[in-house]
Image (cartoon, helix red, strand yellow):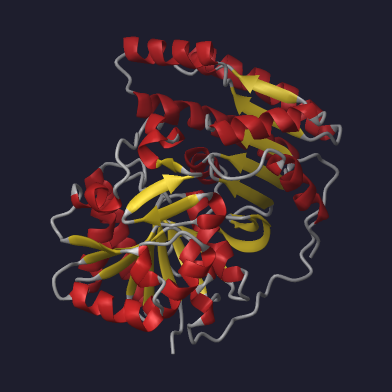
Length: 428
């Protein structure tokens, strides 16, 4: 019987995403920020360490995942999961290798499909809402542009271990056939990517692979695994928590994805006031401080009037282009520019939280979520309730507040409106 499931996630929103998949099956899930895992109480079925390593250098991401895996091993975990981006952005080869090295293992099952969010895999080729990965919005990712769609090729470029896949036709022959094929692959290969196009496919995969020690990929398979795992659910101890105030909810958006652009536009159209951060001001100290003060003062006043407030980085194409040009002229690369904008949003949020004792916070964007959480001293969170596929609410650890941390590419147009309403309705 598995006592505790140990997960290493490469970003904050992904950690919440996979935590939600288990919590929907009555498993309790706890997320811990990397570096804060010492003396963590193992009081949940699922312990997730958020390394926030997707944008790190390959060597640093390896180090983080290796150490996080060792920590989970010491906690008594016996099933391990390496949670990555559902389109393979990031240092996937280094991170997968790090987990295997830490555990002394040489084989991992990888399932990247997430049908409920439009991610499908057939013949190892990944699509997003029907488009090849290389033709999707992720081809224009500013840090990890995806120019290939074959998952075997993408992963093989990042590891010396051997990569293979199992096709959808084999999956649909059932769990016993799939298991036999996997065992044959295991004799030659180290990483085995499994095709899936539907949730029913994932159920078959979960039945076939649930007792392998190392799993990896997107969170979707985690919704099916509990059907086959022997784990005694640990009930949540989160009851009768008084998280109430007279303030509005604060929404922070640092994502430039089409989904989040739609969501912020919808939120504004619903009547929520918006304060736009001018990203061109983040490079010069006095300009940055003046911009932070302006945004803070405007948002602070509105929140204290009980109004919900959106603070977002400017998404106008000309402003984004000018921001990049200013940065490039200062010999600052795109990744660092992005991090500077996230850090400025985090500074604003910290000032607001300290001035208002903020209790309801929604953040859109993976890097922004991690940056803001760290700035606020949030050391993790307990996963609470599902708002939409892949996005739960959470009770922060380290600061008494309710939070929603959303991946930039997740959610329907009205998600932010529903997330704010959800936090207001939560009561313990």
